[in-house]
Length: 188
Image (cartoon, rainbow, N blue to C red; front, side):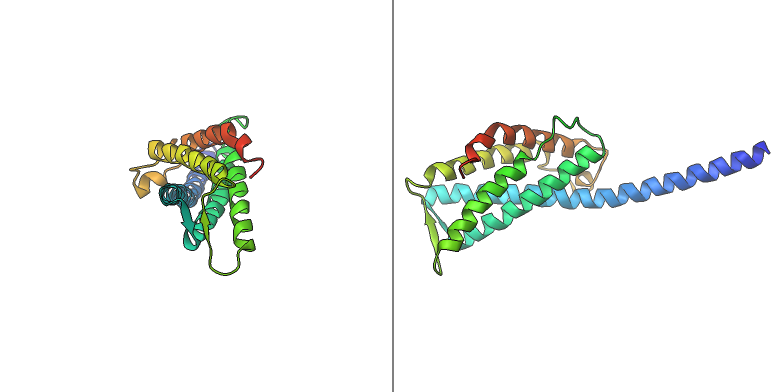
C-alpha cells in the first residue's frame, strides 16, 4: 500500500511540476512582450519629446507616434502591474497605476489637439502648451532613467525570466516616480 501511495504521490508531483513549467513558459513569453513594448514605447517617446523641444514643434507623425506609444504605456504598465500584484511580488501599497494615469492624460491632450486640427498639422511649442509639454518631457526622462537602470542591456532570455526581479523593480520605480509627478497632470 505504501509503495502504491508513493508512486501516486510521485506521479502527482511530476504532473504538478510539468504544469508549473508550462505556466512559467507561458508567463515568461507574455512578460517578455509586455516589458519589451513598455520599455520601447517609453524610450521612443523620450526621443520624440527631446527632438520636439530642440525644434520647438512636433510634426503630425510625431504626435501620432506619441499617441500610439502612450496607448502602449497605458496598456502594458497596467498589465505588468497586474503581474506584480497577482504573483505577490510587492505589497499592493507599493504598486499603483499612476504611470497609466499620466500616459492617459497626455494621450487625451494630444488626441484633442489632433481632433481639432483640420488636415495636416504640427504642434508648435508656445506659451499655452510649453508648460504641459515640459511636464511630459520631465516624466518621460524619469521613466527613461528607470528603463535604463533596470532593463537596458537585458537579453530576450533575461526579459522573459519571471524569477529575475528586474521587472518588479521597473514597475515599482515607475510607480514611485509617476505618483510623485501625477499632480502635474490633473489639468492636462
